Image (cartoon, rainbow, N blue to C red):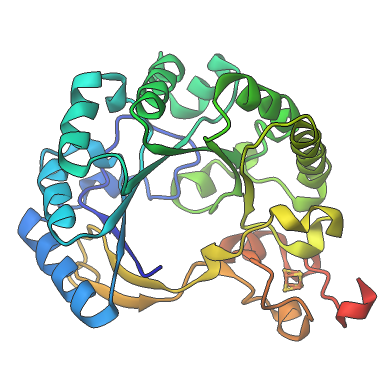
Length: 316
Ligand code: SF4
């Protein structure tokens, strides 16, 4: 898949304390619809882009969002949307989206930060956001759109991941994918790092217990797809490696996001990922290729000693 990551604006209707954007991100001038269309044309011509991942801020806030969707559909590309799903609590708004995209070539990913409403809202800093995001998610699922629910591993909530896993199985049908991710500790998240940053050593036992639950659910006939992202293989028992996905380390074919800096306010092609196995200990590790590694910033915060390279496959 050749993915273009596009954002019209960093405006958001939540104020997440682990947002990787800088505090003044929403002061950046929006990218105009015309600029978005031109960037997409170039990305298709020069990089063969066949998938557009729309992010923000919250992408659904802008009126140009629907117009840009129309343009993407006219190019026959598949669409991914990273959204907090608040706007999709309105069935009318969701209908406007699916009138443009249909339901076949679109997927929506929404992070629910805790199964405890008060904790989710402590993190989003928006009252009723738990109930409204859930409403939005259920509308999306009922419309037949491919949906993923995402859990971000952070210091404030990581110990609850096993219970969160049960909640996902109770709350959503099995065709909803469950994603577990470590996050990029940058921008606002870096400012709040005491609340956000957690070491792999601390979080792994809870992740492994959550995955034990997923295995147990599977044994009992449940079919959910569970994927773990941005988690180094050397931090997990090999028994769980089948859950780990290394797609995040792939190069982005194209990137277009707002910036007040004229140098960055443009389309970028062929961008290295901010995640991967770029750390010194990884360079001679036997698992460098299949391993997703993690965020560059995680390595900077916790140091190279968090990585335990494998000398050869035979040592595993
Ligand atoms: S040392 Fe690096 S490449 Fe090897 S398993 Fe750990 S993170 Fe992956």
